[in-house]
Length: 486
Image 1 (cartoon, helix red, strand yellow):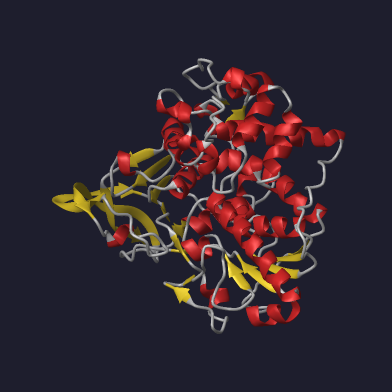
Image 2 (image 1 turned 90 degrees about the vertical axis):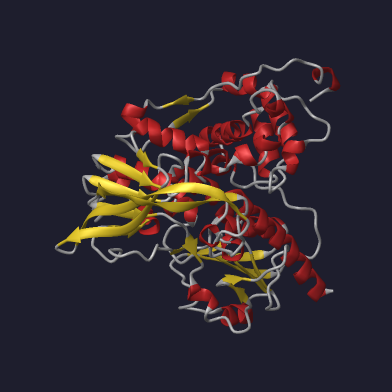
């Protein structure tokens, strides 16, 4: 932005984005948001104030130069906008769709103090989608090589989720030979198997990850580290290793009836739907049973994804049960809004106490009403997977005699995940904390040459925070390899 543009009076409201009609979209898995047109993107980019202190950049975990790419869009230079983003973020089309911008870059936007914050996420998505449409006329420019010395090392990256692929991307740009080990047959981790098609199309994930192979990164699919190989074996062949295996072990409540047929973790439900392509039935005849009445336990984005997916798979009614109130729902406001529009029912301030059944199959959910009391500085139930508390939230307590029941043929438990011990239990000398790998801010672990980042360190977090961890670890790995060569 130029000095001349700094004194302008911005439009108070952001440019709205077109969406599928709720009555139509609940019957399909096509993307809900249709994105900006070029004219809409230029108009929205023109709202940017061009702040000198760039608070939006400080709010981005990977440091995308937001004012520069927004300015390029406002000029109609979409190619420059894309290249500016990609220099810091290899997954702009993904981040533009699923990142919680409202609590990060947009949350720090100066414009948002008096008006709607700049729609940074929508603009990022626009630039990335524009470039994908241009691929028909030629491939994207190769990712620019970083001007650093000390490349040429061999690095193993375990896991192809957001932290792993970001680490691999940055290391390849620094001149290292990188091999990615993925346990499943598709790359992307939670981006591929955890987020529904209507929020993040698989073709978008695949297109962005293609960049790695174009850069010469070796990909080994169906490679389960902890079974086929362990960390010690990897370190015999590589100069360093990065562990980005995420937090994929589902958690349950421990209430009666969780062993009944028809009770699923959100992990299983969404993985079957995404990885096994139930969203393309009958082309893919995926064995996933969704009853007429579905109950989803939880209030986060995964719970919303599960509820909205169940509707699209044919459920007649879907009820989301959460033990706190509307204001405490941890899901993004946009996801809650979309779920309500599509017909998901909400039973708030309600705690499940038992899953009932008949002949081995679930048929209902017993609950009790809750009241929100004074904030507690250390709420054990609401601790994150990493063991860090979330202080200041009101503690829900049961209301005596308020029990009620919900009919449910399928119950989906979406209350969070823990670290999968498959890799860590075979790693001698690797220090853990509540099952998660201990690592410093740069990703260094207790084992020399082994680095880690993302959800396997922090517990379940955002895509962009995992990417930030992968980027920081890549720098630390580069420095580690360079120091050994000197």
